[in-house]
Each structure stands twice: as structure tokens, then as C-alpha cells.
Image (cartoon, rainbow, N blue to C red; front, side, top):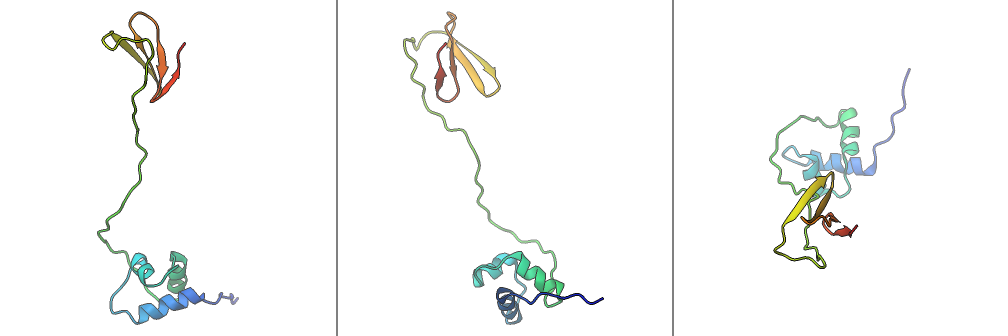
Length: 115
């Protein structure tokens, strides 16, 4: 039973022509620098049809990552003496802080409530 194969996209044809004219093997990132809008599906279509070969190689790549970090700011406490002795009780992501005399403040990185 014969199966029908979809035609190569214009972008895949452009990548194939570029690879034929290249003297060295290129990674997807390197191909993307020369031809805009290329993704792995273009190369997979070429590989599945036997137009290109693919092999795993190790490359040293500099990356930039984005991380979530805590940002801290001072909390303005009202009617409190800076020199007073304080207690801290941590429960999950919330901290309970207050002077030793029993009055407590509930705070995270900003003042949330004063019971």
C-alpha cells in the first residue's frame, strides 16, 4: 500500500539548499542564524525523506536563564521601639513577628495584617 507524502515546505527547501552549499555540518541554532523562521520540523521532514543526516554532537553553548528570586523591602512598623526584643515564628510562607510583650504582627515581605 502506497502512502502519500506531503510536499516539502518552502522553508524546508530553503534549508536544504543552504545545507547543500555549506562546507560544514550545522546545528539548528546555526541554521536559524542564516535562515529566519526555521524550526526542527523542517529538519525532521528533510531527515525523514533522506535528504539530510543527523547525528548527536556536543557543543558548548552560553545560556541566559531567568529565575524567580525574593525581593526584599523594609516594613514600616508603627508604635514599635527598634531596641525592643522581638520573636519570630515561621509557618509555611508566612512569618509571624512581633515584640516579646505578646502583641504580634503577621508579615511576609510586606505588612499584611496587624491582629
